Length: 134
Image (cartoon, rainbow, N blue to C red; front, top):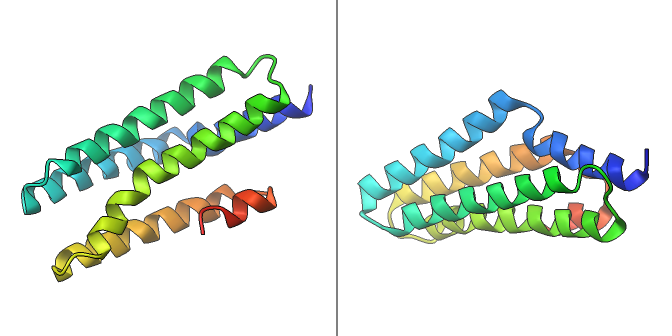
């Protein structure tokens, strides 16, 4: 098995390998969007949720499509897509943290904490991936 195939399989396993954890992450994102919308009335909560789910779908289908015979550039694209998914998620917690409302600040901080737990669990081994989200 090629090292690129192993890496694509590892990226798939990290993101989608634990079905229950993946489902909880997605339910948490949807529930967060619902709560943000109900509290603030921001349509951007649904935009955020849709953008996150869309980027997740793109990443998933890319990893599945490239699982048989990936090349080096496929691994780079997969990592770039993960960073896109990460950015699609992180902008809403960042927006919440800078609000004047203490409840929104707290929600943003808790969402950031969830992201950090997920990133620690991923245990990246590429130095530039370890540094990039920070």
